Amino acid sequence: MQQHELELYADLIVKIGINVQPGQGVSIGAELGHAEFVRVLVASAYKAGAKYVRLTWNDDPSSKARFLHSQPEYLEYLPAYEVATAHTMLDEGWARISLTGSEFPDIFDDVDPALMRKSRVARSKQLGFYMKAMMANQVQWCVAAVPTLAWAHKVFPALPADEALARLWDMVLMTVRADQPDPIAAWQQHDKNLHHIIELMAQHQVRGVHFFDPTLVDGKPSTDLTVGLTDAPQWVAASSVSQNGVRFLPNMPTEEIFTTPHNARVDGYVRTSKPGFPFEREIRNAYFKFENGIVTDYHAEVGQDVLAQLFEINGARQLGEVALVDVRSPINQSGLIFYDTLFDENAVCHIAFGRAYPEGIVGAHEMSDEALAAFGLNNSDAHEDLMIGTNTMYVTGLCDDGTTVPVMRDGQFVIA
Ligand code: ZN
Ligand code: ZN
Image 1 (spheres, protein in one colour):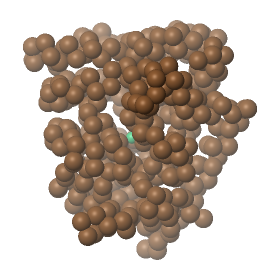
Image 2 (image 1 turned 180 degrees about the horizontal axis):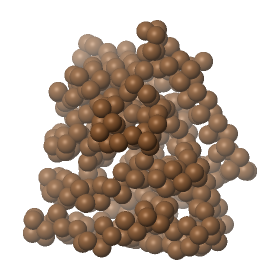
Image 3 (image 1 turned 90 degrees about the horizontal axis):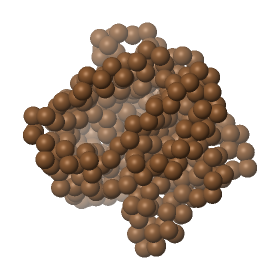
Image 4 (image 1 turned 90 degrees about the vertical axis):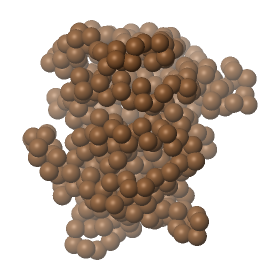
């Protein structure tokens, strides 16, 4: 990768991803394998006026060593300074950049998912306030990806290592529009297009979405799912405004419009259309049946045990997100499976099990946790996206006045 391309990408993350404000602290979470890019990113953040940049390095083999060799009861331990640091970052309004792009895909395949759940839930109990603040956009945050050799090999298994890495970088830079002559103008246009669809959803007062895919599986349509929304649904896309008033892009790339379902208003059944990776473990060809918002039956060709662990987590049997993505999205058009949620979830429509984004409810910032719960907001310790969109999917909006509006046909937006 050319230095100027890395700088351009870093500047995009800093300037329109988190849109760092002068004097603001920035926290960056990355893999050791992202180091070269992280150094460029840190420089970009300081040039843009960051007051201080904090790095947290993740190393999956070290995490795995803990799961394999630690006493199980220690897996719930988290040093108090981690909690204090999170408080400081929130109190001082630090922005957050999370870099994805695994150096060691599949490394956790032979780790007991029950141990991973235990540690995840304990961490979430202690640091949940930080996760919640991010999901409520208290400050700007951005998730972006950095290619690694191992990740590139997963996506392009037939190519030599260097070529695979170069191809993946090209894909990443293309999907974040860094290949455009004016990337910032390209983002503004993309943001406008997605916000236009949101406006139409609001105009039609869409209160629920019906997913229907007539493709027959075992003699019946593959998906027939009604996702009821809350009583004050707010669709969200591309850029958001943080509670401190700064416009930012939570995900780069992003192609979705999403909202918060009511966690008791989901009925019917749905099939996944691409692999998903809760606990870094693969789930493939899964089927879920919902009654009154709750999964009452499920099976998966791959990852049944992973789903069983996921559904042990409070609230994980209910939805926390429903998202619409046009199958013409550049990520889907690439025909690739990225094995990374940031990309795969932006290929096609998806649902997420677990915690919901309060942003999907109008006026959520002024509401108490109790009020949000009464709106049907899922407060789970998990949030796992699974792809359900296909190029034969129909999505119909169920409007407040009892009428319907076609939203997608054959996986493409048609709402007008
Ligand atoms: Zn989503
Ligand atoms: Zn999600």
